[in-house]
Image (cartoon, rainbow, N blue to C red; front, side, top):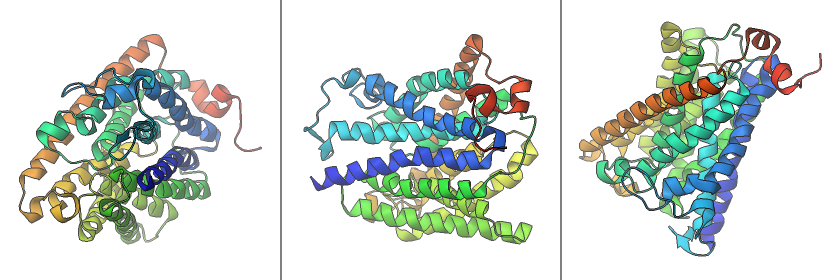
Length: 395
């Protein structure tokens, strides 16, 4: 009963991450696109909630084969409310995983904000959840080949959530092209509030992935906090040296970078490992956003790829370096098992290639039905008015 109550609370915390991200992203955009940007995230909750109970959970987590799940749980058929799965009811595990899928979809929107047509977005994420997310989730967590045959580790979603969403965002950003107008975040207070809600929800995200109120969950709890603050240390330290000013945006970005990095490792590394993962992921994401993005010229509007794609890959690799069997039962490079780094690398490459190809194909199919990008006039006027008929602020 204690485990059920624990995972129930964690599920609520993870659900909170998606509205938190709506505010975080909303504050980072332009005044005329605040509500549009937020609507991408809120729509993710709606679309995923429908698809997950209909067929998504079944495709990801019911018994199938090494590549995709079966159809045992369509419309939650035979899903137990009282039958334990990993010590908790099946239906609670379903809801916990639903919130993971929702935040993954919402993260993608950061790369396409301020220029992707809302109807195209809805169609794209519907197909993406069914044809991409459910497959990767099954491969890693549902008894598929990445988790079982390759043996790669992903405690709470470095591969499934962050690499998948980041790579998807990058592909869509390249296909959509650059925005006509790029400005600084219009409301850093909103960014701070949204980022704090996401940070709070992340404790449920990582800690709840133990699916039990045990010592692994407590390791994940402490590691999550530690990596977040050392992500801030790395990011703000670098921007203080480079730009001579420590910023709130840098603080929130550093925290999220550290959180992304520790996600695949939270239940597998010691406190020392979480410290170094926070530092290295914070520094790596800072470099990707500050130096790599301007040089390559892609318009990842709100840095979905820079934070989640890059951070997820760094965290996944470092899991192979710092994993320690005293925490999660598996050793990594530093404790005598260098092959785990290769397993992690292989999982990353497979995920990147599959997600990138499928995203491109799905976007092309959606493009046959409706244009992916809004009109020049709509972009100039702002998507809040042209698509949603609302304004975030009075003029």
